[in-house]
Length: 187
Image (cartoon, rainbow, N blue to C red; front, side):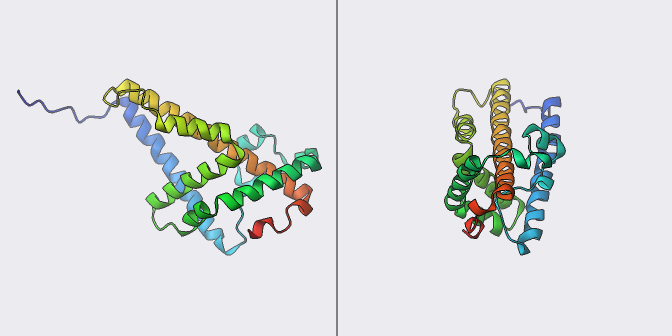
């Protein structure tokens, strides 16, 4: 057979994906660096309102004036699930705390998000697992691979948004009913 080299020039779509991937990567690295700088303060898996972009605050209805809109019963349930998250995700949190380079930190951050989602967003976590383990496409088929990647990225984004929203609700519950969260952050 005659050897024919493949074209090395990336497609327009691939170039766009690279730009998007680089932006996501920069955001992950920024987040990890910020969390390492905050390591001297008490660590918590609960995001504070200032940690979220404004558009996500409104998407999850967590504006500062919503503090009074959480019931004590909901706060109790949130504190139980938060305690379970802390217990179940200790190893994942430790990996994030101890990561040494970008690759380790990205992998550890994804692992922590998956762990947290297993407790508070099981449907979204299952969707990510299914998308990740999907074998219903031919990896040699560019179009099928692009569809697979899009499905996985969409599931991952939904899961991350869900965890962020649940974390924000936990912060509201903790502010509104701190008695249900006493001793939990020391886990």
